[in-house]
Length: 160
Image 1 (cartoon, one colour):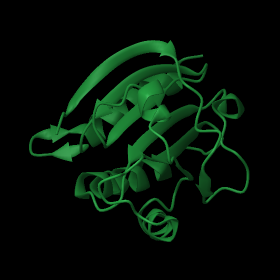
Image 2 (cartoon, one colour):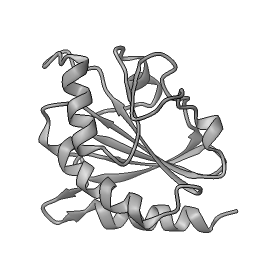
Image 3 (cartoon, helix red, strand yellow):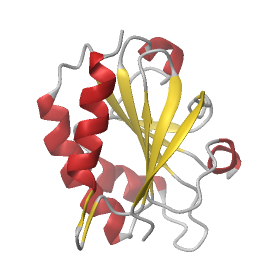
Image 4 (cartoon, helix red, strand yellow):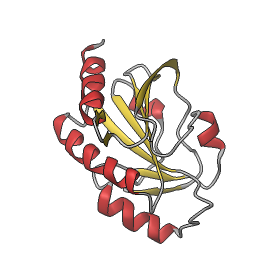
C-alpha cells in the first residue's frame, strides 16, 4: 500500500493537456492555480484504495477556501480494467464530486509525475512546486494519511 510521505522539491509537471474532463468546463492547468495549494490525486476505477481516498478529499475540500485550495483528480491509464469513459465519469461524479478529474489515456503522466503506485496523492505549493507525495490509501491500518495530508496543506497555506 505504500503509506509514506515522500518529500519532493521540484516544479510540478503540468496536468494532462489531452484527456476528457469531468466536473470542469475548461482545461485544468497548474499555471492557472498559482497562489493555491493544490492536491493532485492519481486514481483508477474499481480500486477500493482510490475510492477510500475520495472520502478524505470530500472532507478536506470543505476545510479550505476554494480561492486558496484546489483538488484535481487524474484518472490513470488502467489497462487491466479498461473502463469506458462513462464508467469513469459515473464514479468520479459519485465519489470525487468536490473536484474535477482529467481522464488520462496514456502513461505519459504517470511517468512525468513519477507515480509508482495508484493511488498516489501529490501536494503542490502556491508557487507550483511539487513538495510531497503520499503513496497508497490515505487511511490504512495505523497510517492516518488524512491527518498527515491536512498538516501538509496547513503548513503550505501559511507560506507566502
